[in-house]
Structure formats: structure tokens, C-alpha cells
Amino acid sequence: MSETEKQNPEENVVAEDQIPDDLVNEEAADEATVDTASAAEEAKSDAVRVAELDAQNAQLTDKLLRTMADMENLRNRTRRDKEDAIKYAPQKLVTDLIGVMDNLQRALSAVSEEAAEGNEDLKTLRDGVEMTNREMLKVFEKHNITEVEAMGARMDPHSHEALFEIPDPSQPEGTIVQVIQPGFRLHDRLLRPARVGVAKGGPVAGAEKVDTTA
Image 1 (spheres, rainbow, N blue to C red):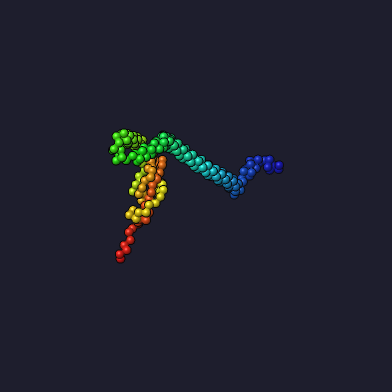
Image 2 (image 1 turned 90 degrees about the vertical axis):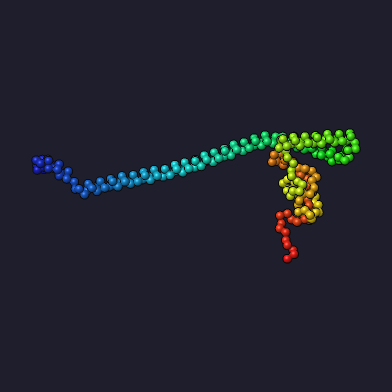
């Protein structure tokens, strides 16, 4: 150190502190740029993370809603199955009773009222069969067992079984003109279709009549 520097140490300190302003500003600007870039990167990373979490949340919500819907459908199906099991529980018994009803109808058809009039024993027997038949019909009605509408109705493959066709131009095509065996339902379930004969050769049901005189 020179003699001058030794004699004026305060001046040396002042000289070292006098750093140009532009250099200070440049260093501050560099630091600010680094901080801004770092903050932007962190913000971008946070935005990506938020988007990922939103996507996961939407996926989990969708799965939850689907599971809840499946559970509700399962509960409804189980409830319907239980109700149907109770509602149609007597189906086997009813089917057997229909066979008994058929035999009663055959017995009544075998002996006409006119034939029974001349024979007291036969009349008593027929009256007993007829009374039993009426009681059976009451029991059927009580338990929602109904006979399928057939005679004069339009042939319906969901309710009727056509055994043969009968030429009858006076009846619309497909009209039931003879019932061989009645059909029955338990509530709305078909137990046995009505076995019938249908008209053939008549006008088609539902078709408009064509004026041939013009």
C-alpha cells in the first residue's frame, strides 16, 4: 500500500463503495428474471396438478354415480322379483285346477239339460257338477284367475292358439268363431292360451271397404 493510501484510508472505502448504478441494476434485473421464471414454472406445475386432480375427481364421481345407479337397479329388480314370486306363487296349483275345470266342463257337455230332465238321478248329478263349476269360477275370480276372451274376438297369437280355420265369409278374416278349450290368466300372466277355430274367407279386419259400383 502506498504512503498516500495509508494516509487516507477513508477515501479507499468510499472508492470501493462507489459501484456504478447500471451494474447494480443489471444484477437486480437478472435476479428478478430468475425469480419470475421460477414462479412461472411453479404456477405451471400447480396448474397441471390441479388439472390432474380435477380429472381424477371427475372419474371417481362418474364411477360413484354408476355404482349408485347399478345398486338402485339391483334393488328395484330384487323388489320386483320378490313381488312376482308372491304374486305368482299359486301358478302351479292354478294350472292343476284348470285341468279340474276342464273335466267339469266336459261332464256338463256330455249330459245336456234336456237329457237330464227325464232322469232324476242324472239331473241331480248334473246340477251338482254345475254347482261345483260355479264355485270354481268364484274361486278363480277371487284369486285373479280370469278366462281369456276368445269367442268373437280377433285372433291374437299372444293369447290364442288357432287349431283350424273355418270358411265363413260373413266374419272378418281371423275372427274366432269356435272355442275348443278356454284359456286362462293369473293376473296378467298367461297360463294357457285359448285353443280356437278362426274364420277364413271374410273381409280383412280393419280394411276399408272398396266401393265397386263406381
